[in-house]
Length: 89
Image: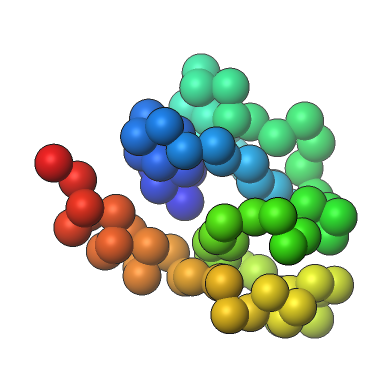
């Protein structure tokens, strides 16, 4: 997921994120781009109607608050990667 975040960031998109745990090499790579979250964990207040898209990894728990509230705007990692790859110059 961190590589997708970096690719979208490099493409000019505003990227935010959260994760329960972030390990190396993801941690270091995100930090170099200024994308490392301030704290680890799930923050439901970061999921809101003002977002253009939400990309979920395979470890997201379906019972998290706000998981289903924006379900029509969720994309999984594979779908987003395919879309990103096919729109690159």
